[in-house]
Image 1 (tube, rainbow, N blue to C red):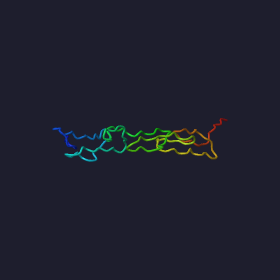
Image 2: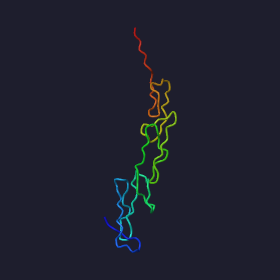
Image 3: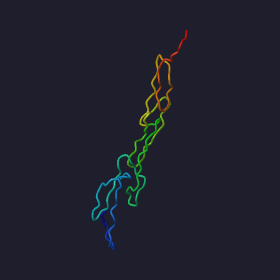
Image 4: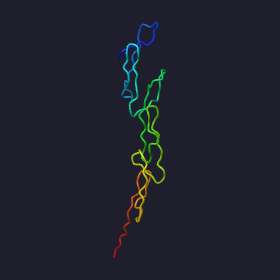
Length: 131
């Protein structure tokens, strides 16, 4: 790891360059030089949760995944987490991405009711006759 000095002063030692930890959602945007510190940026799929005194991101977190029965209302950005919203009645979501309207059963009966996580299943109910 290198060092840098970005301001004239009476110090004899340079400052250590910042390390951008990819395991914590950061990557090197600009390498450290003799006069500038490393500039880290945020990996896709992460957002900044903590800033340093110099307004640089020091702590990231993975974007939340919406659960089944929800949809993505607002996708996550480098500065904000994903915002999820429950599916409205009559809609479902298996994957937590978008809500789809329940199937409309025509000329049949509902075999299985829909829920926020599954579609309606249409079909005639079978009645068994024994003679």
